[in-house]
Amino acid sequence: MKNRLVLPVVLVLLGTIGLSFGTALGAEKPQQDIGALIKAMSERLETQDRKIALLEGKLTDEALQAARHEEIAKIMSDMRADAGQRTALPKWLDNLKFYGDLRLRYEHHAADGTQMRERNRYRFRLRFGFTKKWLDDQMEVGFRLASGSNADGQSTNQTFDNAFNKKQIWIDRAYAKYSPNMLPGLTLIAGKIPNILEHTDLVFDSDINPEGAAAAYQHAIAGIDVFGKFAHLVVNETRDTHDTILNVYQGGIHTPLPFGAKATIAAAWYDFENYEDSPVGGNNWARNTKMINVLAKVKLNTFDIPWQVYFDWVHNTAENDQTPGLENAADGYAFGVKFGRNKKQGDWSIGYQFKYIEENATPSGLNDSDFGGTDLRGHVIKSKYNLTDFLTAGGSFFITRPIAGEAERNDFLMQLDLVWKF
Image 1: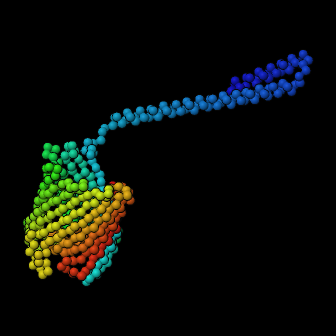
Image 2: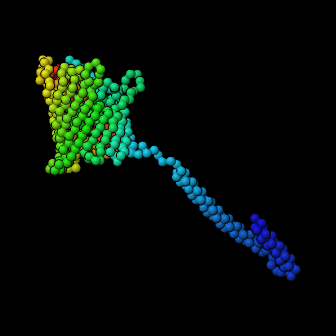
Image 3: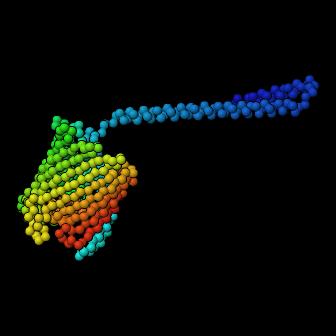
């Protein structure tokens, strides 16, 4: 600031001296010329001051920016040092996977005949769980929790009901699985397990998670995967009578076919012990149950559209029901076709099934509860569309009628679903 005042003062003094000197010498220039010169020089000084201020501001901004960069570098250095001092996450969190899904459903059920009724229900399903692997993926432990009822292993639905009461969550799966590297193809599993058997909902509902232990072994022979499976399942344990046990023996193959098709063919023997002491579902014949089950599936891909067909048959060799109209009601079969698949946004699928299940062909407490159990025949149509990779909308339609019961009654069940997977 002092520098700015010195130059004008000097100029004023010089001007005064010049003016006096000019007067003394008798100069002819008028006094106003000196004033104009001072004014021009002042304007020039102001211009220089503005340039100096601009340069100072630029230098200030650059210095500030450099200081900020230095401060950010110091913060990052401190963060890296702090992270290096922290302890690592627990090892048991490695290979821990969380999964689950939420389903919202509207359901309409109508029937004619002597049991005329019409029912509308709003329902939801919530499932979530974890799986953990270690020992180079040889060992897996998993559990899943799900909504539903403790008294119904065939369903995980909760109905909007009971004055907004809280809904229950149950243990749906809890198991340990071992697949040793020293014997590739072998799997051992125990607990409340996912169903490892080759099956359709003719015998097992998709919501059934059996309890017990199972083993499976698969080996390739001449390009064909040959497999064998055994399951020892506890249906009911009691101190008053004998425990009800189900032993399943299954063998089959996975084989390639022409045109890129793949087939699965399996045969199983279902051997119930002491079933008469604790029947499952509505089949209350007082004897053991022995079932033969044969299943065939073929998967193909035509014009980039995946599709599959299947045929499933079951026969109860121990059936001896003497109820009029139910003699020899020991057979059941189903066949179906499905086009498309649902993996990512825009995917779609549509399928059709026909089922014929006589009263004593298989325990009604284990097979597809939406179809209605046994002593039924009818049609099932299902479709699904991926709104996003994780959100699907779908519909299912069941049109059934009894085989030997109230044969004139027709049932119609419609389910509309919105499912979010996470």
